Image 1 (tube, helix red, strand yellow):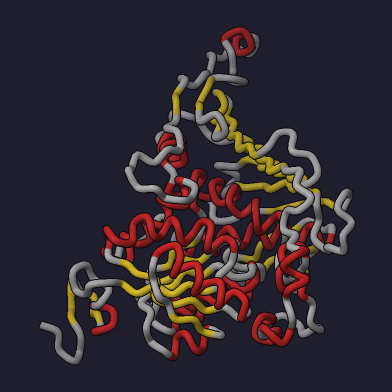
Image 2 (image 1 turned 45 degrees about the vertical axis):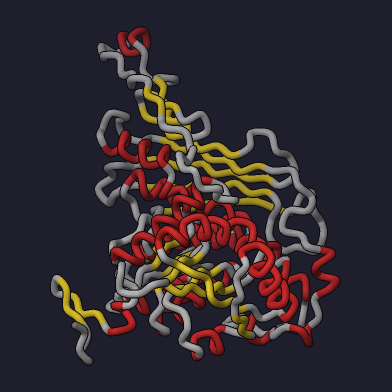
Length: 437
């Protein structure tokens, strides 16, 4: 029986509202979509719907600043899922309606942490896309909001729910791989339209959206539909490559190594091909130094990305003195390890890891996820944790930490300085000075 004070389980107190989220306490857990973006409709929503009926979840509302997308959302849910949803012009209206227990956030990069804060304060559990934050102030505000709230927050770092990445983490943590000494990562594409939406930009009118609400805490500037829709090309609405792609890969470094953030970052880049008015680079290279204060568990990460030649594709290579862990081929091999011949020259023994196959990223399920397997698994993990109240695979702290690395990289690109992190002030320092917008 639930009294006015709520229900206590295992030392935790649940209000009536929180109890409604516990398995069996309510027919459906009600979900709101914050931002009816392409990412929402083509990946997150299909991944969610694949488990919704089984786990007892239902999307009931969409919040989007643009009237066109609200109309599209109503049509999308009606035609694809036979559902009638409510739409809201902004998040204030959504939360004032008190019809959502949880939300899925897929808005502009710089808004993620701030929209997470709004959801937590409204008493909602949250699935929030990465990058989690593009400034340390926003990251700290979100982390503070979560403290003591009891909310479940999953960051959209879906590698953390993939079986091959779990196997890689287990293999490294077991000690069989040896100490990580170097990591090389790439993300290369050749897509002129990547992050561009010219046809949609032409349809987007200021009177049909809310530019001031979109800007949130960013400096005011006049209406620009490109920055509204192609925000990934423009700082300070997105860092571009670091926030969009590097955030996924650098997160695995933290996960596998146990480090929360780099000791230092240097980086360089430029706009070498796509001179279309963007401010974020189409090419960049960054070098990260990781290690404990005493010098142990130290290694370097070399990260490079280009948007004008796809050779090399997406790669994540971990090296030790004994071999290589390759998350493209999903194999651990003795390639490059210390051979008997080389070791003998210094009276040393060979140091070669045993070959090991990581599992492939395939979902063994009859469900038609309509999305990539990793996103399906990651969304399902969040949904299960909303019901169990266990911590998800990618909690807020993981997003906080990848944000530190991203912001350090962005600061290095913008200033040309060697960048460090002050763990006391929780600030990114470029040339000894706090990095601001």
